[in-house]
Length: 516
Image (cartoon, rainbow, N blue to C red; front, top):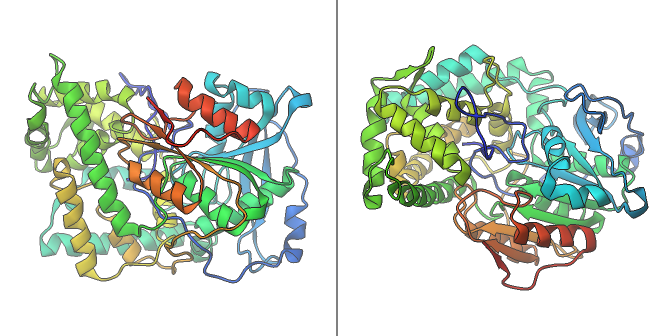
C-alpha cells in the first residue's frame, strides 16, 4: 500500500472521500536514502537557487488566502544546462508579519501525496492557527505529482479499474506468479512510455532528487534555513535533507517515522505486522459494540473477517454500478485502519458486505487509490511505485521476494489470500532504471535536534520506527498512545502544544514525554 492516511471523515455516497488532506495517503514505508551519485555543482545551480517565484492565483483553489507558483528545477541535477521541469508550490502568507519567523515547508507523505493540497488544508485548520501566525505555510508537489510538470503517467483510469477488479495477486501458483511478473514488466514499460522524459524522469524522481528540489525551494523562498514538517514518507524526505544539508536546517518535525535502516522487503514485513496489530485493536473496539459485523468475540475477528471476504476471490459482489473484488475489500479495510475515525465506516462496510453489497468498502478502496467520484485517478499509486523502486537497492532474487511475501502474511493473517501491494517487490525487481539511493544508518554532524513523533499502535510506521529514527538523528522522541497513523495537528492538545513550541521556539519536550 502507499503511505497515505485516510481522512478523518470519508464520504462517497455515505462516505466523505478526499485525498486532498494533510494526511499522508495509505501505503508501505520506504527507507531514508543517501545520494549514490556525484554531488551537483552549487555554482552551476545558482540560476535555480536564485530564481524569483512568480506568485499568483491558484488554479486548484479560488481562496484568495493562497497564492501559487511554479519552481523551475533541473530534470537531472548533474545536467543543470539540460532539460528543466516545474514543481508546483502553494503558500499561505502569515498576516502577522511583525512576528514572522519564515516559511514552514511541509510534505504529507506518499510517496505521491500532494503538498499543495495538504498545505491548503493545514493552513486553515484550527490546530495550525498558532503556526499560521508565525510562518508562511508552504506545500510543494514533488516530482511527477499533482501540479508539478510533467506528471507521471502509467495506467489509464480504465486500466486501473480493470487492475483492481482482477484478483490475480491472490493466485500463488507458478502460473499466477508468472502472470504477476509479466504484468509488472508491462506496467513498468507503460510508465516509461507514457510519461514525458520517460526513463530520464523515472531515474530522477526519487527522494534524492526531491531533497535537491526542496533546497532550491528553500533558497527561492528566501529562507536561510529550512523549517520542515514531514508526515510518513515526508519523514524520509526530512531525514535525507538533513543528511545532504545539515547546516541548512532550522527545525524538523517528523511524524509517523520511516525506519532508516530497513530495506523494501523488511519495511513491508514490519508494516504488515503493524497492520495486524491495529486490526486487532479494531477488533476489540468492534467486539464491544452490539452491531459489530465480525461478532462479539475479539479473539476471533481475524477468522470472521477471512470468512467474510475470501468468497470474493471467486464471487465479487455488487457495489453500485461496480463490483467489490477481494483485493478491493482488503485495500478498503487496510485504508480504514489508518484512523480510528474511519473504524465506524469499516464496520458499516463489513456489515454491508454481509448483506451482499460492497459499496462502502469500494469507497474506502477508492480513497486509497486516489480515485475521484468521476472515475479519474490522481496517479498517487504510480508515483508511489516509481519512487519506491529507486529509493532502495533492487531485490531480484525470487527466493528473497517469495520469502518476504510469506513473512508478510505470517505477520498479518487477516490479509491471507493476498495483500494490496504484494506486487511491489515484483514491480521493483523489473524496474527500467537503477536505484539512486540505498538503505543505511544516518550519521549526521551539526544537525539541530529534530522532534520525532511516534504512535504506539501505528499500522503503517510502527512505533519502533520512530524510536529508531530519533536515536539515529540524535533527536527528541514524543510518544502518542493511540491506534492511528500520525497525529500532529489533528487536535490532540498535548501533541500539538509540544510540536508548535518546537517549531516556533525550538523548545523540545522533556525526555520520555507521552501524550494520549
